[in-house]
Amino acid sequence: MGNFFPRWTNWLPLKLAVAAGFIVFGVSLAVPYYFTPKYTRVGYEPTQPVPFSHKIHAGQLGLDCRYCHSFAEVSSHANVPTNQTCFNCHGPGKGNIKASSPKLEKVIKAAETGKPIEWVKVHKAPDYVYFNHSAHLNRGISCQNCHGQINEMEVVKHAEPQSMGWCLECHRNPEQKLRPLDQITNLNYKPEQLDRSGFYAGLLKKGVKADEIAATIKEGSSAGKLEDLVALAVGKYGEKVTQLEVGSQLKKHWQVQPPENCTACHR
Ligand code: HEC
Ligand code: HEC
Ligand code: HEC
Ligand code: HEC
Ligand code: HEC
Image 1 (cartoon, rainbow, N blue to C red):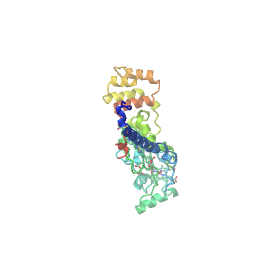
Image 2: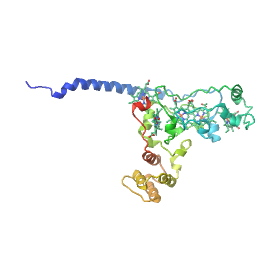
Image 3: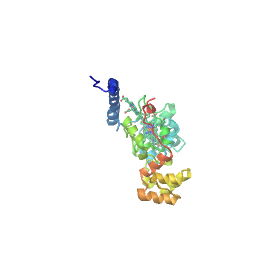
Image 4: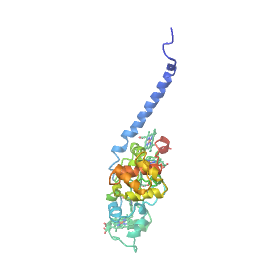
């Protein structure tokens, strides 16, 4: 009798074992993907020791985020400001803004004793996750993409899930979020408010070839000068600048490639 099973079946047990391994692995992936804090952490809004309002300071007064969170753009960790930063305006002799307000009592006491105010942490990545602020901000991702509309919050709350699935969603489609670097702390940014001609002129000035920009707008097309690019873009995207338009150009020409491999985030 001939061999009923073809030769490759010798490998079947091994193949099955590998496949089973992948299935277990897949399920363990699915767990963090679907069930992690996504549903529980969003909305977390602890009471802070001082009723500091982002709505007043970042919204109404228009202070740039980096005035207080000065490390966010240059280091892996963002920082909460020290009392000294508050005293630029609320300190005795330096503007004295609301210096006698009961709401500032703890700030003034902290300055006298030299002890920092114990702000309650809102966002916290687990220890096994590697995350770097500057690596995102220097590539055109905004505070708003990850923290929501902070400039409108009286009390900071956890606006985005910051789960693994959420990180990966953006890593797979960064063109949906990328914006010009000078807009990363503008939480009211809207792509349709960008000046199209200025945007393309900026790319040309950085040395990107008109033909490459044209081909990114519409495959196979070419262009000689700025006017051609603008006309091409109007044809493709309409009168107003769109997110996809800006995002695809930045992704292509800045060579943005967010990692999706496990070791990038779990080192
Ligand atoms: C005048 C100083 C100041 C400015 C300007 C400011 N912040 Fe803050 N920020 C703070 C202080 C103080 C805290 C800690 C208390 C709190 O959570 O409200 C904080 C907390 C935060 C947190 C939560 C930190 C955590 O524990 O997870 C985020 C996120 C944040 N700020 C983002 C921003 C963004 C985005 C902007 C710009 C739109 C901004 N901040 C502007 C002072 C400032
Ligand atoms: C650039 C100046 C400036 C800085 C820096 C600043 N503030 Fe203010 N703060 C103001 C102004 C202006 C107001 C609004 C005063 C008003 O309502 O008339 C205010 C209001 C407040 C109030 C509300 C006071 C009340 O009675 O309504 C608190 C609390 C406060 N700030 C805390 C802080 C803390 C904490 C810091 C440091 C993290 C800080 N501020 C940094 C300018 C500043
Ligand atoms: C790509 C997403 C992303 C962007 C963009 C981003 N953050 Fe964060 N932020 C996070 C994550 C995740 C954490 C928690 C990090 C941790 O625990 O190490 C965090 C934490 C913070 C904290 C708390 C730091 C601490 O030690 O208490 C502050 C403050 C903060 N971010 C401010 C900002 C500001 C201001 C900007 C914009 C200039 C910004 N972030 C942009 C994701 C982001
Ligand atoms: C809104 C979009 C967005 C979100 C959300 C986001 N990322 Fe990223 N991430 C990027 C972009 C863009 C880059 C830059 C890629 C490049 O430089 O080519 C990046 C780069 C990285 C890198 C490589 C650079 C480095 O620091 O070594 C790591 C790691 C990373 N992200 C981790 C995370 C983690 C963890 C989260 C979730 C807590 C997260 N990211 C959420 C867009 C995002
Ligand atoms: C872009 C960043 C990023 C990449 C890439 C990534 N992870 Fe994660 N992972 C995270 C974050 C952030 C969390 C924490 C989620 C939370 O706190 O909700 C996490 C959580 C986990 C957990 C969760 C454990 C628990 O207790 O819930 C496991 C397991 C895990 N990741 C495995 C992997 C594997 C395997 C890969 C590769 C296929 C991978 N991760 C790729 C960011 C990433």
